[in-house]
Length: 258
Image (cartoon, rainbow, N blue to C red):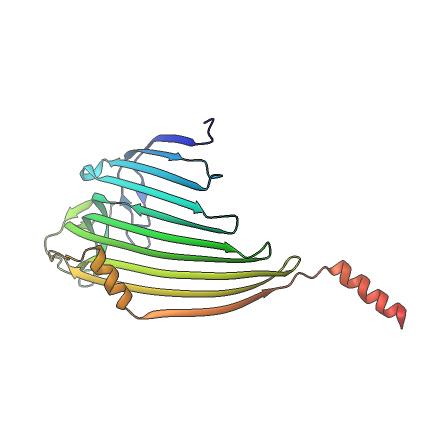
């Protein structure tokens, strides 16, 4: 657009396919669904102090009339030439999705299920440039995914599904992942860098049996994640650019002076 905004939309159709990955067992196949989808977005001028990006996706599947939605909002604010922050938010609910649930250890059957999926992701980024050679970047991310199975099936050899009313294992996972990545980069010579990196990772995972209700909401999950054991890593990485021709000339001059 004339104001350097961008607007776009995509319509598509995907025919049913043979899915060799979803069964989680080599040599097995799941005959999946067909779907049609629409993905639309709008983006403001990112050369401005404040910029935003909004994307909405809708998918309609043939199997169990499953629906998938995805809403993404990205915001960036530049305080000045040195300091900027951004925030990304994505929520992606699905209804009546079909996928792998478990392996029945007593029969070795592959268990599939019709399920609702709720996924939420929050990402916060910060960037500060001390000068054109020293930069600090930080990234904080929390990812939450919750599955709620409504109906179970046994995967048949031909890739179809047959209703299973006997399996009672744990199939309702609730997964949280919280990460912090902080990087300080210093270009101390042309093409040569020192990177100081700190990484923090925390996971929180629970899995409940089919038919039991997991009432953990987003904030309770987040609090449990923060109370879980943390893994911290600190590293120093040095990259030095060595020009072979310059080194060769220096060596030759040194020999000539002897």
